[in-house]
Length: 345
Image (cartoon, rainbow, N blue to C red):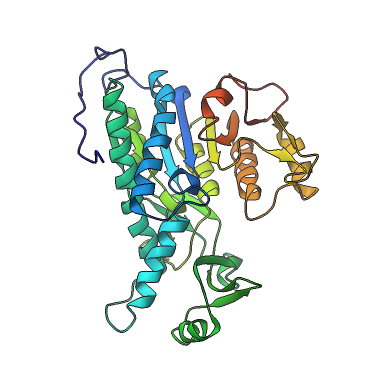
């Protein structure tokens, strides 16, 4: 396993291999936010090991090479469900033996873990392809509203499943739990709507320097702004896709790419007559959502994020899988969602 550091050239102007370098002035119209789903690091049925995550990270980063070669200015976001769940296991198992870590710090830890993995993998992939683009992972704070109703009724399951005895012990330590029929008990937390990306000015500065930025991992570390202007962390998790759409708007990216486990959006998903939907307008996406076509735990947040991003002025959104990204960008797969019937270039 080659897990050593990559040595990238940082030069002015175009680099010798034809790749983009820091010297080329990035343009806002070339910005793309790519949201990586949890399957980017752990595919269905795989053993949850570090080795599998390393291999999957390399595979995911290789899929992004064409975007870098074409001169796109990239911001990568990522999920953290599997990783933050494991961090919570460590916290829960160490109760009484080590100091407890609040949920928002677990999110921050997962940002560091996954950001390191993606940053190093992308650096190595770019170096092997003769491309000179620096990459940085940024611990990102995302503001939420303290009055968000999600705090009054936590509903987002996180972490592993427990039996009744262990669930009772965790309840006694103040962890809200829910019984998921046939599977066991899980901890539930609040999942408030993202309101503002606190670090957007820093991300903007990095993008202007031609740097690929990994940000808002796991939806970002949830914080609220107190009356005195100070920030304070809150125990919650933010939907990664909603945060990615908000970030894309904040940095003026015209395009949002959401990479998930499915190659496209399907009508009547998992039914015998399921059919890929190649293109949707905002109005069509809304109607399908109202008809219950997008389950809340899977495609629902992705389509919602796409609609909200386009309503704020985005040009188009592509929903596809890592394996199908190249074909989808060439118009041969995925689902494009746009404000009107004409797909963006």
